[in-house]
Image (tube, rainbow, N blue to C red):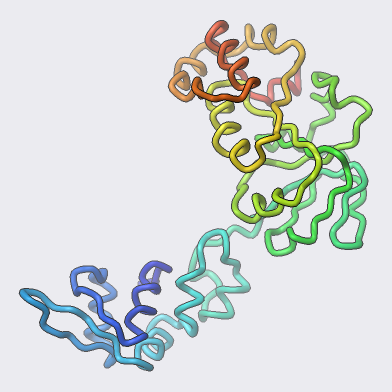
Length: 279
């Protein structure tokens, strides 16, 4: 049996000499504590029992039984904060918990982008640079614009769709994939003084993502809309709109979102942003 961070948090609580109701501890964890460790005691509490940890014993048992040398660090190993390096340091197995080695920010830079004092250069068609979360604070962009895309193909092949966005012509920008955005990226955005354009999927769900995942953390963000969107939508999918109609953020106070909501309700079709690669 592998321990989860939530279960480790319970053991941290017990390790300080505190107690938990017996019914709150998962059966398999409780069984391990009862059968293999002399690290807790059971106390009568009303009609039931509580489990009280013995200081100094719970951590030692976790090390023997699960190979976890630092229960507190393991309990805090959330998906956004864990890596195989961390798990190797606090447990005997770097695969104790699932990790994503590609967790971070994928960017395409066309110049004026730095990691610390090192220039990142230019990323050719079909390539991108991964900035992992632990080094994200050192990312420095000197382009005046960030252009965020939702889908990987559009990041790799953006040159094929840029003609649909005249506002970007002759401007410097950095492309960033809106994938796995989390607290680290939002914190980085707090210090960003440039502009941010966002390319959604042109459907109700795409608008909802912009309204809930982008605007609350960067209120000055703007949607990047192709000049011929209405014509493109006529070639979109009716089913896509009907399946997502309930997602339309019709109460949004953002002028661009309101305008696109009205357009989607008029045309009643939706379009992937990848469609712009071949239109």
